[in-house]
Length: 333
Image 1 (cartoon, rainbow, N blue to C red):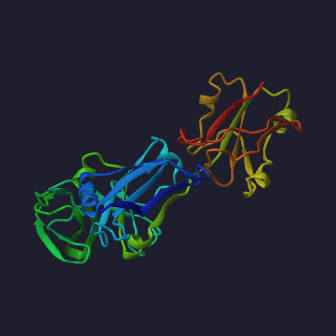
Image 2: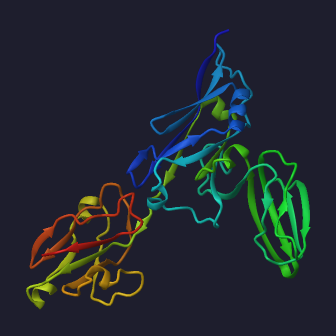
Image 3: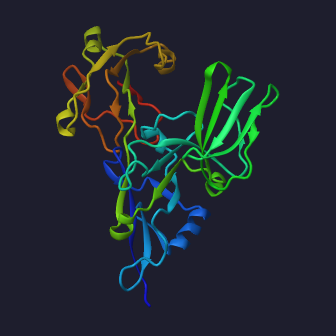
């Protein structure tokens, strides 16, 4: 009997910062996932930023392995350390890892990732509540109880032992109605080298029969553009004529960005004038966007610097992938 392979899943990555499909993420395959793949008679390939999961079938197209209901975990590793700077990150508590899954619908990723605490075997549970005594309980996601403990005044944490890899719910409760809960993902293969995120996919009968395409779609973060113009003007009128205007909105298909003209002192988290002109020999004016602008690898375009009606700079700089903010200093002669 000869065997062939056909698609079970494809997972593409799309990012507004890049303008569509991209290869911003690499897919990590932990040992537990490789073991599950072997039991499914399946293999994975990564090509042009896309993950392909293929299953072996016989001459009649029947899968050789047991695939329906199998869950596979993949680590999501950004190829660039700047990924978190230009990405609109999910709103999760500190220390939680975003987990993308197809739980609500087998054929689509959930609308938003949930947060999990990624851990290895026998994880140490550090409570979020400071109250003591504190009752801790661990259940499976379906509510099946697994373990519990009570922490006293001298107890800082509790070691959860004896659990296989998987996802669990940690619940905390104390006097006065105080409570907290979180998800715990025990996966030694990922915890040893923690990824930025985790992808969890469960195979359905439809996937096995016809294949399924998924897309991890990311929105770009936004930044408040600030242009500090440092100049030694010929006169007050010359200084007053300096303006930043948006002439690229129509071409980019976006709303026009208006700028507010500010003079020192600036205050807030803006740059101090003494940093921009240590000698105090020049005048400074700040043009601050009235609304945040979405980051893009190319553009937006058409933010122009004008002086006395003349265009001095036709495309002012934009925050690329490597910048943590959108503050720029322009020196004029």
